[in-house]
View 1: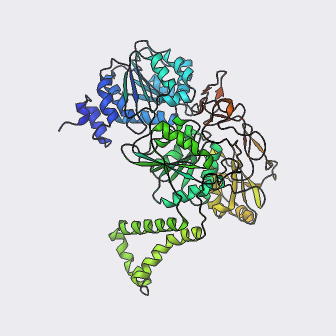
View 2: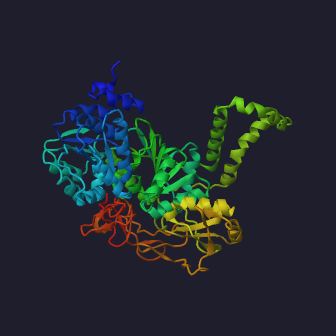
View 3: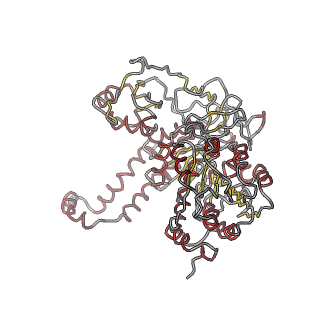
Length: 639
């Protein structure tokens, strides 16, 4: 029987590689676009949601059109972030594993540029790149694009949204005029339409679904809560879905860190992904998530771009994004490859107008959901446990030797007693927590007088806590989650006893409850890390002390607790221009974020006069000219 990919015109070597990856039939975007692109004579615009198989839609035709006997760049693929860059490059390498002499190179910031240059010099036919790092390599005159026949702009809307338009112009000016340009995008804002007009000649346009709409496999829900209950609502949603495997989106890297840290302390398997992490740290977090060793990934929009993880059950919008396109990309992390998914928004009543705007633009109705009661959560968790026990795979060969001892232990218990005890192991924990759980659902207007989106801020300042110094930091590849686990494991304390963690480069500060400080000192007396003694001191003991209101890099100032973010409270929908939008106050209580740039230049990038961020010596470029928090406010357009 002929494989469906062969019927589209794909060669046996590539089809066999695709089959080995488990793909038997093409997706709609692949079925429609591959025959057109195989002709190699047309510019092309493909509009489809994330998770619909766009990489194979342009990758498979490229492998058929390129002459692999020539070891010069013949195809250039530009994408907005390093995660997406790596994903595309790895997919192409897998597709071409049976093709002789096929070479694909991923070029992105935050990695060793010398290694990337060596790979290019050794010979390459397909270059997958982020714009910033690609400009660096072009500036070094280390690549020749005179043989490029095909340029692919993937996630074009997001590249423009991140401020890459000038970079794209500069890069494409080094490619031949007669090349063919293929543009793929999830949405079709005016900027993408302009790119098609400027770079293409009568392109073939293919739209899967309706422009700017969401994936039909995704259900959209929203919960209205008081701002102070936002974190409690997040926990209740997670507890009510025992098998949840989710990405939780926050607006800023600081919110991302705070939410992840508090989830970890409360016993959830979570970690943060944001622009301040090194490439090694990001890879570590993403590997845990892909392998499902982590249940909740807390991320910013920029950091999550390019996440391609199957079977994500939920996307949770802890904060609504500033741009509608971002919501489309967020929700596209679930419901991939034909599977269903749920996109949840946790909002206060003032944000109801934004939900209505989303409904109009993506063309889908949002369901107003009610947060479950404590009893509902306990019931759901109990039967989840029962289901697991019923379906667990029994290793008869290994367990048989222990059965006599087990039966002896249970000899005074009836079958019903044994079942009750097993069920209670997990059930009691939730029953204790939710025994007096309040109703978190809020009616419209219930949050009147509250200031902005503070979530469940716990007021963890310095009172009752001892601030400690530790001689480990981000250069040791610690994330805040790693540091929390390291402190708890070695100090023999519970996560709830740890307060704020302030991760620096070669050292860090953390707070512990006063009554466990001595226990932490005792636990770390003989601890080593990578062959060196770990040192714990009270903040200030070694001349390293910092006040509670310390100023961090980038002009950011934080208040003591899990919260303190103060934002102007406009009603209704999203406002643009000088009229508002997401304007953070520069004074008063809470966090002042001046000069902090989401997705920022983690590796030492710089901002040029045009407002574009570029890689320099491994700097993370992906933040682009995205949101600049504080100062002049938002650089990106509002809804």
